[in-house]
Length: 237
Image (tube, rainbow, N blue to C red):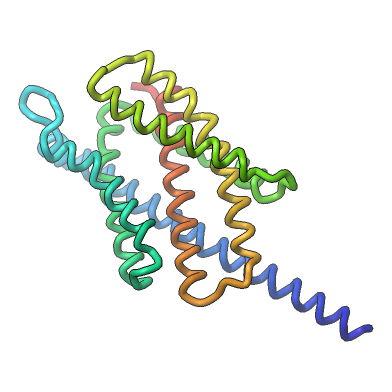
C-alpha cells in the first residue's frame, strides 16, 4: 500500500513538472515573439522606413502597405495548417518571420500614440491578460462552448475590420473595439484552459514541442489584439 501511494505521488509529481515545463516553453515563445515584434515596430517607425514603404504620396496605403497588412495572416494560416507536416526548425523560423511581419505592421502606432501611453497600455494589457490567464487555468467551469462562440465573433470582427477599410466608419470601428475587449479577454481564459489539458496529457516528443509553439503563438496573437484594443481606448495621441 505504501508503495502504491508513492507511485501515485511520483506520477502526480511527474505530471506537474511536465505541465510546468510545457507552460514555461509556451510563455517563452510568446515573450520572444512580443520582444521581436516590439523592437521591429519601434525600429520601423524610428527609421522612417514604415512611412516610406507603406504609404503613397497622397497618404493612402501603398501596395507594400497592403502586403504588410495581409502577409501576417497568410503566414500564420500556413503555420497553423502545416504545423504537423513541417519540421520543428521550420516551424520556429516561420513563427519568427510572423513576429517580424506583425512588428512591421504595428509600426504605425508610434506615429499615432505617444511612447508613454504605449508603455502604459502594455502594462494594463499585461495585467489584464495575466488575470484572465489565471482564471482560465484555475477555473473548474468548462469554457469550451464559450470559446467556440468567441472565435466565431472574432472571425466576424476580422471581416468587419476589413470591410471598414473601405467604408471608413468610426461607429463600426468603435463597435469592433468594444467587442474586442470581451472577445480577447474571454479567449485568453479559454485558451489557458485548453493548454492546461494539453500540458497534463501524455503527448510527448516533437508533437508536444509543436503544441508548445502553437500555444505560444495563440497567446501572442491574443495579447497583441488585446493590446491594440485597449490602446484604442486609453492611448494618448
